[in-house]
Amino acid sequence: MPKTNTLIKICGLTSEEQALQVAKLGADAIGIISVEESPRYISAEIKKKIFKTLENLHPKIERVSVVQNCPIDLIIKNFLGNPSETIIQLHGDEDIDYCKKIRKKIPNIGLWKAFRIKTEKDIDKIKPFEDFVDAILLDSWNEKTYGGSGEKIKSTYLKNLQFSKPWWLAGGISIEWINEILTDIKPDGLDISSSIEFSPGLKDIKKTKDLLNFLKKN
Image 1 (cartoon, rainbow, N blue to C red):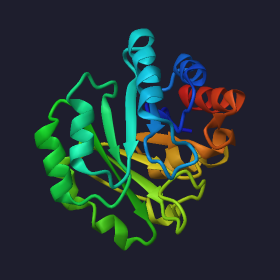
Image 2: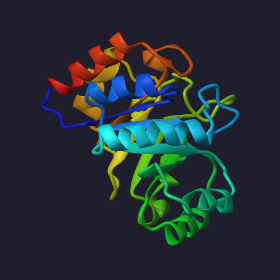
Image 3: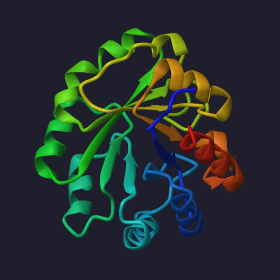
Protein backbone atom coordinates (compact mmCIF):
# COMPACT_ATOMS: atom_id res chain seq x y z
CA MET A 1 0.00 0.00 0.00
CA PRO A 2 1.32 3.50 -0.81
CA LYS A 3 2.42 5.93 1.87
CA THR A 4 -0.53 8.22 2.57
CA ASN A 5 -1.10 11.60 4.13
CA THR A 6 -4.86 11.20 3.84
CA LEU A 7 -6.74 13.32 6.36
CA ILE A 8 -9.36 11.69 8.57
CA LYS A 9 -12.65 13.19 9.72
CA ILE A 10 -14.82 11.34 12.21
CA CYS A 11 -18.37 12.61 11.83
CA GLY A 12 -21.59 12.38 13.83
CA LEU A 13 -20.12 12.65 17.33
CA THR A 14 -22.75 13.27 20.01
CA SER A 15 -20.82 13.37 23.29
CA GLU A 16 -17.91 15.35 24.68
CA GLU A 17 -16.30 12.18 26.05
CA GLN A 18 -16.22 10.47 22.65
CA ALA A 19 -15.09 13.63 20.88
CA LEU A 20 -12.08 13.82 23.19
CA GLN A 21 -11.33 10.12 22.73
CA VAL A 22 -11.41 10.49 18.94
CA ALA A 23 -9.25 13.62 19.08
CA LYS A 24 -6.63 11.77 21.16
CA LEU A 25 -6.58 8.96 18.59
CA GLY A 26 -5.33 11.45 15.99
CA ALA A 27 -8.33 12.43 13.88
CA ASP A 28 -7.75 15.57 11.81
CA ALA A 29 -11.37 16.75 11.97
CA ILE A 30 -14.48 16.07 14.03
CA GLY A 31 -17.95 16.64 12.66
CA ILE A 32 -21.15 17.37 14.55
CA ILE A 33 -24.55 17.14 12.87
CA SER A 34 -26.76 20.22 13.15
CA VAL A 35 -29.59 18.69 11.12
CA GLU A 36 -32.64 18.00 13.27
CA GLU A 37 -33.89 15.12 11.10
CA SER A 38 -30.65 13.21 11.62
CA PRO A 39 -30.40 10.47 14.29
CA ARG A 40 -26.97 11.98 15.08
CA TYR A 41 -28.32 15.49 15.69
CA ILE A 42 -27.35 17.36 18.84
CA SER A 43 -28.42 20.83 19.93
CA ALA A 44 -26.43 23.99 19.25
CA GLU A 45 -25.69 24.31 22.97
CA ILE A 46 -24.18 20.83 23.27
CA LYS A 47 -22.28 21.30 20.02
CA LYS A 48 -20.77 24.54 21.25
CA LYS A 49 -19.71 22.91 24.53
CA ILE A 50 -18.01 20.00 22.69
CA PHE A 51 -16.27 22.29 20.21
CA LYS A 52 -15.08 24.70 22.91
CA THR A 53 -13.55 21.78 24.82
CA LEU A 54 -11.82 20.58 21.63
CA GLU A 55 -10.62 24.11 20.92
CA ASN A 56 -9.01 24.29 24.36
CA LEU A 57 -7.50 20.79 24.49
CA HIS A 58 -6.93 19.97 20.79
CA PRO A 59 -6.74 23.34 19.02
CA LYS A 60 -5.34 21.93 15.76
CA ILE A 61 -8.31 19.67 15.04
CA GLU A 62 -10.88 21.02 12.58
CA ARG A 63 -14.31 21.46 14.15
CA VAL A 64 -16.92 20.87 11.47
CA SER A 65 -20.57 21.87 11.81
CA VAL A 66 -22.71 19.93 9.33
CA VAL A 67 -25.84 21.75 8.12
CA GLN A 68 -28.40 20.91 5.47
CA ASN A 69 -30.54 23.41 3.53
CA CYS A 70 -30.37 25.76 6.51
CA PRO A 71 -31.59 29.36 6.03
CA ILE A 72 -28.52 31.59 5.58
CA ASP A 73 -29.81 34.10 8.10
CA LEU A 74 -29.92 31.39 10.76
CA ILE A 75 -26.29 30.40 10.11
CA ILE A 76 -25.16 34.04 10.14
CA LYS A 77 -27.02 34.66 13.42
CA ASN A 78 -25.04 31.81 14.99
CA PHE A 79 -21.78 33.43 13.88
CA LEU A 80 -22.48 36.88 15.25
CA GLY A 81 -21.27 35.62 18.60
CA ASN A 82 -18.07 33.64 19.04
CA PRO A 83 -18.35 30.63 16.69
CA SER A 84 -17.06 27.36 18.05
CA GLU A 85 -16.58 25.68 14.66
CA THR A 86 -13.78 26.19 12.15
CA ILE A 87 -15.68 24.69 9.18
CA ILE A 88 -19.25 24.83 7.91
CA GLN A 89 -20.12 21.75 5.85
CA LEU A 90 -23.10 22.20 3.56
CA HIS A 91 -24.67 18.76 3.19
CA GLY A 92 -27.91 19.56 1.38
CA ASP A 93 -29.03 21.00 -1.95
CA GLU A 94 -27.36 24.38 -1.52
CA ASP A 95 -26.63 26.13 -4.81
CA ILE A 96 -23.71 28.33 -5.88
CA ASP A 97 -25.54 31.51 -4.91
CA TYR A 98 -25.95 30.13 -1.38
CA CYS A 99 -22.21 29.36 -1.19
CA LYS A 100 -21.30 32.84 -2.42
CA LYS A 101 -23.51 34.51 0.19
CA ILE A 102 -22.07 32.51 3.08
CA ARG A 103 -18.52 33.11 1.86
CA LYS A 104 -19.18 36.85 1.73
CA LYS A 105 -20.95 37.06 5.10
CA ILE A 106 -18.62 34.72 7.03
CA PRO A 107 -15.24 34.96 5.26
CA ASN A 108 -13.11 33.64 8.12
CA ILE A 109 -14.74 30.21 8.38
CA GLY A 110 -13.87 27.33 6.08
CA LEU A 111 -16.65 26.22 3.74
CA TRP A 112 -17.04 22.62 2.56
CA LYS A 113 -19.75 21.46 0.16
CA ALA A 114 -21.00 17.88 0.04
CA PHE A 115 -22.40 16.30 -3.12
CA ARG A 116 -24.42 13.10 -3.19
CA ILE A 117 -23.31 10.92 -6.09
CA LYS A 118 -25.92 8.69 -7.70
CA THR A 119 -24.52 8.56 -11.25
CA GLU A 120 -21.25 9.59 -12.85
CA LYS A 121 -22.96 12.68 -14.29
CA ASP A 122 -23.44 14.03 -10.77
CA ILE A 123 -19.67 14.57 -10.56
CA ASP A 124 -19.78 16.88 -13.60
CA LYS A 125 -22.05 19.29 -11.69
CA ILE A 126 -19.38 19.96 -9.06
CA LYS A 127 -16.90 21.98 -11.15
CA PRO A 128 -18.76 25.35 -10.96
CA PHE A 129 -18.66 25.23 -7.15
CA GLU A 130 -14.88 24.96 -6.90
CA ASP A 131 -14.22 28.73 -6.83
CA PHE A 132 -16.59 29.27 -3.91
CA VAL A 133 -15.71 26.52 -1.42
CA ASP A 134 -12.58 25.35 0.39
CA ALA A 135 -13.18 21.62 0.01
CA ILE A 136 -15.49 19.17 -1.74
CA LEU A 137 -17.02 16.10 -0.11
CA LEU A 138 -18.45 13.23 -2.13
CA ASP A 139 -21.07 11.09 -0.41
CA SER A 140 -23.29 8.27 -1.64
CA TRP A 141 -26.83 9.00 -2.78
CA ASN A 142 -29.60 7.57 -0.65
CA GLU A 143 -33.32 8.11 -1.05
CA LYS A 144 -34.01 8.28 2.69
CA THR A 145 -31.08 10.24 4.05
CA TYR A 146 -28.56 12.91 3.06
CA GLY A 147 -25.67 11.18 4.82
CA GLY A 148 -24.56 8.52 7.28
CA SER A 149 -26.23 5.69 5.36
CA GLY A 150 -23.10 3.54 5.18
CA GLU A 151 -23.58 3.04 1.44
CA LYS A 152 -20.61 3.37 -0.91
CA ILE A 153 -20.26 5.36 -4.12
CA LYS A 154 -19.43 3.09 -7.05
CA SER A 155 -15.64 2.95 -7.26
CA THR A 156 -15.71 3.34 -11.04
CA TYR A 157 -17.08 6.87 -10.60
CA LEU A 158 -14.16 7.84 -8.39
CA LYS A 159 -11.10 6.85 -10.40
CA ASN A 160 -8.86 9.67 -11.70
CA LEU A 161 -10.90 12.45 -10.11
CA GLN A 162 -9.27 15.86 -10.12
CA PHE A 163 -10.56 19.01 -8.48
CA SER A 164 -8.91 22.37 -7.89
CA LYS A 165 -9.76 22.08 -4.19
CA PRO A 166 -9.10 19.26 -1.71
CA TRP A 167 -11.76 16.56 -1.77
CA TRP A 168 -13.07 14.17 0.84
CA LEU A 169 -14.67 10.78 0.33
CA ALA A 170 -17.60 9.66 2.50
CA GLY A 171 -19.99 6.73 2.47
CA GLY A 172 -19.35 3.29 3.93
CA ILE A 173 -15.62 3.71 4.48
CA SER A 174 -14.19 0.72 6.34
CA ILE A 175 -10.84 -1.06 6.67
CA GLU A 176 -11.92 -3.52 3.96
CA TRP A 177 -12.18 -0.71 1.40
CA ILE A 178 -9.10 1.27 2.44
CA ASN A 179 -6.56 -0.44 0.15
CA GLU A 180 -8.58 0.36 -2.95
CA ILE A 181 -9.27 3.91 -1.79
CA LEU A 182 -5.61 4.73 -1.14
CA THR A 183 -4.28 2.95 -4.23
CA ASP A 184 -6.86 3.80 -6.91
CA ILE A 185 -9.05 6.67 -5.69
CA LYS A 186 -6.63 8.80 -3.67
CA PRO A 187 -8.87 11.39 -2.00
CA ASP A 188 -7.34 14.10 0.17
CA GLY A 189 -9.49 13.06 3.10
CA LEU A 190 -11.84 10.37 4.39
CA ASP A 191 -15.08 11.18 6.20
CA ILE A 192 -16.05 8.26 8.42
CA SER A 193 -19.22 7.79 10.45
CA SER A 194 -21.57 4.80 10.37
CA SER A 195 -18.94 2.09 9.73
CA ILE A 196 -17.45 2.69 13.20
CA GLU A 197 -20.69 2.90 15.19
CA PHE A 198 -22.61 0.73 17.62
CA SER A 199 -25.66 2.86 16.82
CA PRO A 200 -26.15 6.33 15.25
CA GLY A 201 -23.99 8.80 17.16
CA LEU A 202 -22.38 6.20 19.43
CA LYS A 203 -18.92 5.31 18.14
CA ASP A 204 -17.13 2.03 18.69
CA ILE A 205 -13.87 3.49 19.97
CA LYS A 206 -11.93 0.26 19.36
CA LYS A 207 -13.04 0.19 15.71
CA THR A 208 -12.23 3.88 15.42
CA LYS A 209 -8.77 3.32 16.89
CA ASP A 210 -8.08 0.33 14.60
CA LEU A 211 -9.12 2.30 11.52
CA LEU A 212 -7.09 5.38 12.43
CA ASN A 213 -4.04 3.28 13.30
CA PHE A 214 -4.38 1.39 10.02
CA LEU A 215 -4.47 4.64 8.07
CA LYS A 216 -1.83 6.52 10.02
CA LYS A 217 0.76 3.75 9.77
CA ASN A 218 0.43 3.58 5.96
